[in-house]
Length: 454
Image (cartoon, rainbow, N blue to C red):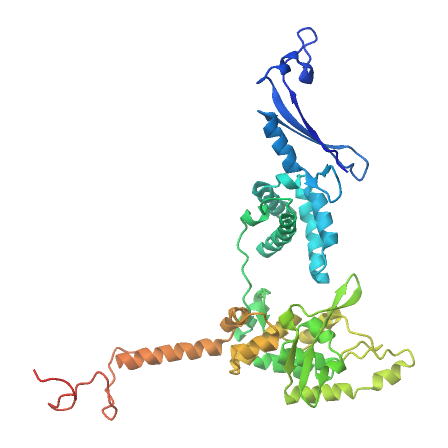
């Protein structure tokens, strides 16, 4: 526990004989206006037992010093004194007091605190944390990564700031800080990577240079080629399901037979499997909107029925086979790790001679193919479990060239019709006299009905 702290006055006068500073022993300190006021606080001992003390000075009056001392004190419930927190102290308390976030979110918070926030901001007093401290931290992070040759992305910086902002928002609710210093830090804008289609030209460029897009999706023909090439694999059904219905890999790994109704052609997404430290954990879906019921097409139902009939593995493995109830399992019958699904997918796609995509891009591909097939955005949003239709449109509309071509042709047709131009020339089209025109004059000398004579 920190001491209550205190304020005192001292000056820079020196002893005329020893020439040593008198500090608080100067007799002139009894006079008003002589010297300056200081604040001193003793913090709890460090982990190694070392002393931690805070001293601030140069204040013109005791009232000013007392106000600074009060801003640094943090009341502890039931404690007649006051405690003083550094940013490191508060971050440690905040992490252990979190209750609602998912395991993956907590893992991200802990990594950000351990790697960035505590090393750079830890010694700063929570009450004195400013936007300048936060900005200096991000500048140091960028320069450190540049020196290592591993540039940090704008998205990573944004996630680090989001962690600090969440911690400081909790401190504001406790009345420990007056404002959130993380909210005023300036960072490079993080842009969502746009998925692109593996067109023949892009595939040729990749084969020649090795350059690949950050996010890419297969065409319908490439997806069909992958499914055909992997049809004999024991886990073909899971990749068929992801490619056609757009499940996340954790959702597919966490799917159980009790969640699937083949007669009703539906599957309920109610949980997901995540891997942390080599252990599998059952967690809720990514967001509340991710918990959903998806419709299954007749080909997916047939694939799942065939997959369920594959009982030879249980007999081959023997009495140690685990009847886990999961739809997609390892050879022992236990749940399949998401990372394992990714590694198998990568090997299968390489064997098929296809350009590289991530397993998550197979989900992107399901969305783009659905839009190309004419499925409306709202249905695609519900299929993917997106929280907003804006997210669905922003992510996928630009990927589907058929939609862009259709829009371009409609616009061109409208302009051509209005201008009566022959496409690719400046020649005007002959008007179709068999159809009425809003701009053509009435035939002969007849006046339109209701038009007065002049």
